[in-house]
Image (tube, rainbow, N blue to C red; front, side):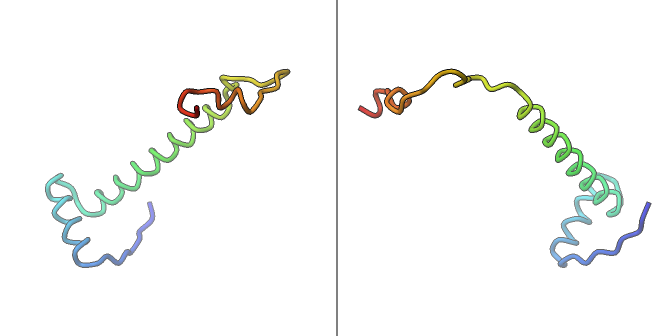
Length: 78
């Protein structure tokens, strides 16, 4: 593990200390957990997006020409 020094505004520092105390943990543990959770969520979201983008399109226009009129053929646009 690496040691890191951070500077926080007084209000943020007090909030973090109170939150850490409520969770019965130290400030370093709280920040480590918060950052780990953020990293995990970001990695999960990235894999979700990648799997979504890898899917075949639901509607395919292959070998079909869609007319503009067909796209906008809804009651709302009449």
